[in-house]
Length: 244
Ligand SMILES: [Zn+2]
Image 1 (cartoon, rainbow, N blue to C red):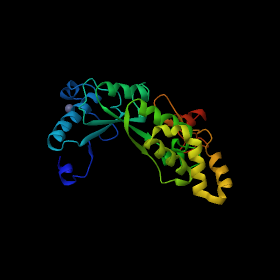
Image 2: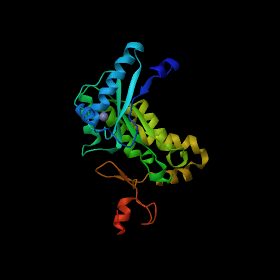
Image 3: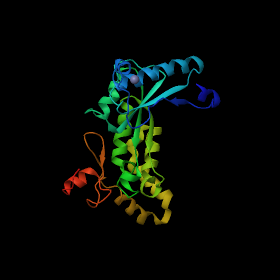
Image 4: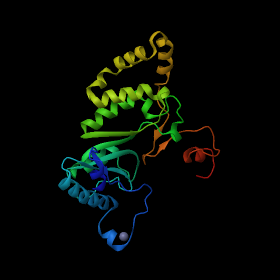
């Protein structure tokens, strides 16, 4: 409440829990319900206070990690729940989690991962932000499922991802632009590179191949690396015979 009083231009305040788990397991806390229930109960309390003092302001949280499954309680109408597209708990898909929170009345958003340096190291065609097919499919798909907010973890890597970030911004403005992606790409290349367009176009196009980043059933991305040495991810180490 104090934050909104000090900064009246803020559209929302976050009540998302600190990352990394560590939830209290005392009898009283367990009686509140699942981790998602506890998060939702707090969000609703804050939302009631915010609604009373600052009508129109929103309360935000993620559906992520320990609190990714939908809660068993209804969600106040001024709470926006942004569903993470990785690091989800349980075996539900992103879409199932969105539907679950939506059924409890949450205003839906999506919390994406367009580029994470430790996953893609700013290499071309290694991140979701560079994958035009992924962007063209998911942004309209999330919108059709009810999502009205989006944030995406991204890097300051406009060389490999500038085109994808541009296309994402066009789709977020109007999802129908997904029908025009080839045309938007041509326009981007013409304006960005002018006479050098054919050379840059071919290099940009070659970066539009299928991304090698895969997402496991737990939603944890697996980015293949060169070898089993230090820094190799667990699946790579395992494949190389090293202990996981
Ligand atoms: Zn406790």
